[in-house]
Length: 144
Image (cartoon, rainbow, N blue to C red):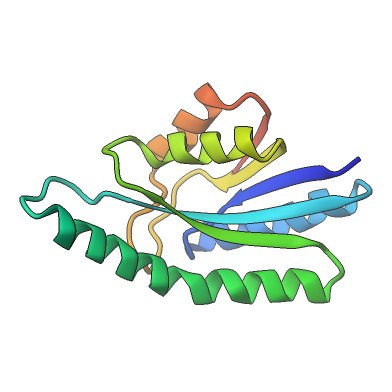
């Protein structure tokens, strides 16, 4: 049976620590798969929906190289990994999108930083970790 571990990543220092912790957790079980995920959410009100989507797509493209780097590093260490950028066009807290991903992918552990302000935007804020703790059906590990 596979153990799925989700890491919420936004290129902040705490999300880098979350990746390291996910590696440690994955090494404690057999058949672990690490899912490294970034959420790009709607940045706020806009009068031009097409412009907002274009901006979000640009942010997603900026995030992909960092995710690919992490995936390559984990795979070199023999840890199966998937990575993805999730686009959330709603005005919800990005934590909701991460919880949906966790439910859809049978995640057993979510690892994330208590706060994150990444280089490609504000994907994970303090409220995100709180949202995940409240909504997730699986274990959650928050790093400070």
